[in-house]
Length: 286
Image (tube, rainbow, N blue to C red; front, side, top):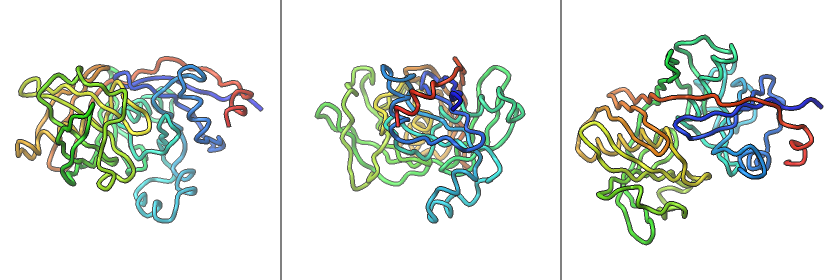
């Protein structure tokens, strides 16, 4: 009945609890995720990153999911990501940067380039000496047009798939003036499993400013896949196939590049603390 190791960290202030589960034995229920992420009851976070081998996750997925994850290395490290409400999500850019930084810090991966498994497939990463991490995010695919409703006002947007669903809306005003305490309205037909909503404006030829409301979490200080979605949406709107932009979020700045082959995201990853979860608390949170 030993206590449970945890770490706490963030990527541009999008914060996470990291749970090293190297032997794949933790029973990470939705209730425990919610308790961990609760900022009064638990440690407080926007999500949980469980560190497991790919085989642990692949063995518990449905046959359809295993087909989709056919390229994931069962012997490699896998980011088992959970939203703050306990739901499972396909991908998280800020979380993946922190996950990669943890693997290097723990001696589970060599600094430089390596691959991490995710529910949106294997993701190549590169760690840098300045503490930043570059992720190869794969393609950012446009799959429609829709709108988000905030405080009764509709904002047209572009539907983008970055391994998870996004609705990125270019706005004229200052995104800091918007009220995102309530989830933006969206089309449940186009987004049957919910959607991350980005509202952004251009700040110059190579920079945008963005706020984001994440499904299963609420407004966060940053969203890695959301920054890629916003840049991809802007390029789509101006009919440019490729481009690079800095993205300013509430928690800092990242750099996104959209190429013909996919996209990359570069930004900081900060490990803040480590400790032990009391086993009695863990059992009571089930």
